[in-house]
Length: 108
Length: 112
Image 1 (cartoon, one colour):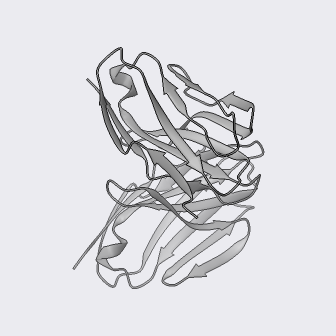
Image 2: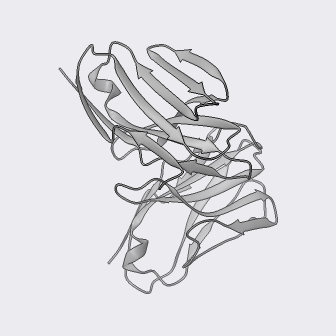
C-alpha cells in the first residue's frame, strides 16, 4: 500500500462543475503539498498547507491532520484546469512522498 | 529569478552511453532533489542533498550518481544508460524543512 493515496485516479467533468480530489496518507507529516502538472509540462505548486484551509482563486485546499486526509476543490471548472493533480507529503525526514496523481479532464 | 532550471529538456541515449542531467537553482536553497516519473507512478526519489558537499540516496539510486559542489548546482549522472532509465526526470529544491518545493521543467530521457 502506498503511503500516499489519491482518488479518483481519473476524473472527467463538464465545464462549470465543482470538482473534488482526495488525498489520504498513512504517515506522520509536517505539511502537505498540492501540485499541478499539465501534459508534457513541468510541475507547479498550488498549495502547501499544514492545517485548515487555503484558497486561491477557484482552488480550495483543506487538510484534516487527525484523519490524515486532504482535499483539493475546484469551483466552476474550466477546460484549462485539465491537468494531473498531485498530492505530496512532507514527512519527518527531508523527503517528499508523492501520490500517483489524479488526471482531470474538463470538457466544454 | 529563474527558479529551478534543468537541461536538457529532451535527450535520446543509446544503451551504454553516459550523460549528465544539469540542475541549477538561484534561490539559495539548501535542499535539492532528483526524482523520476514513470507512467502511472508517483515521483520516485533518486538522490537528494541537504547542502553543499552532502548527498544521500533516495528510493531508486541504482544506476545514478550525484554531486553537490555548490549550493546552486546538483547534477545527476547516468554512467551506463539502460532502457529501464527511460523516464521523465525532475529536479526540485526548497529552502529547508517545511518549506515549499520548487520544480524544474523536467528532462524527458529515452534510452534505446
